[in-house]
Image (cartoon, rainbow, N blue to C red; front, side, top):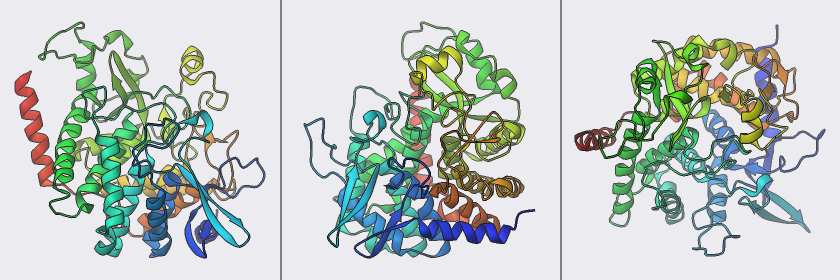
Length: 473
């Protein structure tokens, strides 16, 4: 049996070893400290990766590194309106950055996507930044920092970037492939649920963090309204349980008018065969994507678990999502938590939707691979729902291999048995994800740091939107 205390201590030692300093101060953690592969940008500080490290540091009571990260990334945020398509738009946070040291001087070099594989700008960085900020303020009670002009400006710039009118009329965000954690083409273009769920969390964080004054009133009002619209839209069109599946099975198509039931013109013939054995009367989940004549039935773990934490999923839905993990434990958890999506794209679907991506073959990397970093959000969601036995079970599985395998980035295979074909070892968010899970296991109340309680104002707005649109139809 592995020595659990030794694993925990080694994990903290490795997380501390990954810390990057800027002008003598800790500023973040690099993605991986694996020197056995070509590093590419794994030696950089990624906003989405550091979000996991930040929660671990905050739960441990180490606040300085998180505050420094928030300040420096606020400075890196693009502050100018751009008509030059080759420059980051106003409000964009970098996907990652590195610290270059020359002649005794440190310089930060950010990447807004212009250097990234496939050259895709990050949609999620700003949302993770707000999420980290909210957690930092919640545990430190440092409202002077949150209400400083620099931080308030960063929040409003992110809101302006994400809430601006575009060429659609939905409360969801139009997102390209490769622009968030799933950083390679995987057929998630459109309105992927992972981002909509994170967007909802960021909006809820913004509502708490924005200082109540005349200048911010328009932002606060817009956030509350968007939260209501977004909750209604995601609940109505993304939620899938057996009753909803039966409704889709009987859909009529080519409906015209505001009273149409099948508003996205989904053809029942597109229901995949695997879904009939996947769904049962005691489970449900938010589907991966919804768009014109498109319902992506795939299950994406991160978005569904974040929906539980943010309150987007109500109490009953949260139970049904966790039931899904229990019912399909061998696939979603298997020999290493936690599968990113299910099922994998195969055959012609893989060739067309991934662009023949050899890294994203079936049951590997983002195409059905398993990511230990997600252990943190799984443990937090299980704690909120009251299924603490699932935390114990998942951690026990992780502890059998994570340390022995060298803390890999991801695992491959239908049941997550194989170390990922191109996985870096000493992957920082794999380490931090485990540490958070262990700290929640030790003290379940620590989940409060990343949990959102019910907000009566948001609930009222959602009910108002529901009533208005239901009357219209």
